[in-house]
Length: 259
Image 1 (tube, rainbow, N blue to C red):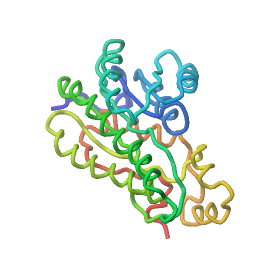
Image 2: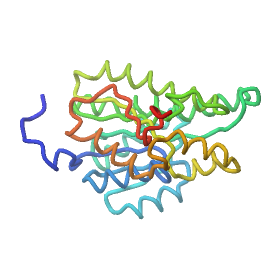
Image 3: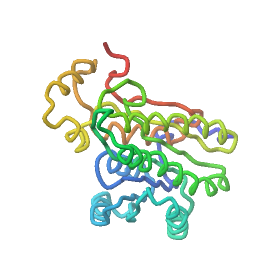
């Protein structure tokens, strides 16, 4: 049971937490790591490009370290977690954020394309979660977050592989939340709306009609910022969300309910 300390601003503190954010060198992952460090956590960011993650960690500050890592190599996840535990301690927050985007019509999506997207998102998140779970179970404390998408909620054209991967996140999240709820481990997902990142710029490149359609159906009438996702992740990992598990939290300016 959580302690009976009165909740105040410190309910959102992550002091004492060790957060692992995959795909943390750019975009949403970088914003999540930045917000968590600002809230008191020590953060580890990973990504395939060592120069990118190391530069990102330097920008975030001394409470952030970086390791080059490819989530599509599942056998490399346990050694990475062991290295983090030896250097910092038990990982108590995992953010499954690493991913790739593929914009292609269904009939033009090859089996190899489809498999590559699922291996990065689904298989990668599965392997990393399995690697951190024993430590969280031993500590009887943990927060696991899957970074889902509007494609987990809405039918969207030309992103069949991405939609399949992000929808799979919801099944994993709910099942794992039901398995670990009595062990002090909470599992949730965030569905970012259209957030101004390089991935969004790539998705909208040369498609002004799609951009206009997105803004028209978003009640707040604008794109979000990466910090919006960063502080949502802080909330879900903090004592302020101590009774929250199995939830998909849209951070989308109302796009998922807009007309």
